[in-house]
Image (cartoon, rainbow, N blue to C red; front, side, top):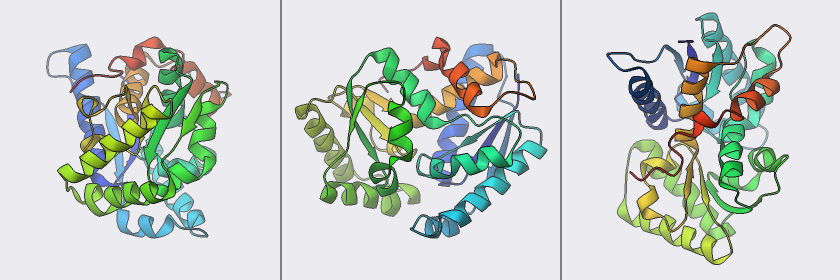
Length: 261
């Protein structure tokens, strides 16, 4: 079992979900009292929320790069950013560390490819829905159309994430709103929906959706387990992008695609 590195606290609520998902799957696959070998650098989320604004991303990149270096020094063999939005600074983290970064968009794209879907909806923070860094990587090499809600609904989803989920609050009225947005995606021709915020799966599950759900938190955590147990050989000449491409070709990382909870 190889050691997984996590950059967490983005928020702590979803980091707890990563910890649970990874350990449950390790136990499921290996039996006994086994649990995952992990290194977690959990950051203070408050200053990072302030960084998620125009002109402040450089500071976010510095903080996350330092966190990546910390998990590397502690013995991790790969690193995950436990958030979708902060993958905006993934290139800076890849530059700062020698270990490979397992990119959340790569494992999500691999799952969509296997499902053979050509149009999907995406829900996430304002940054993730409005900026191209995640969507462009999802569609790279795969002709899938990704749609997002209209501006007013984007603001409502963003508010649910930051004002409720990041604080551990689960509200039925917010789940109903997401259900309606997914129904709208269906009417617009989407055949699946990406939960592109690691907190959203705390509120919205497959049974709430008229479309198959691509839960990026679970997909990312499952890919980390696959790496830990069946990692391809990584050499000094390997590039992080090569690592992600190789890993996402492994069918086993998608053990729980569209799992009904």
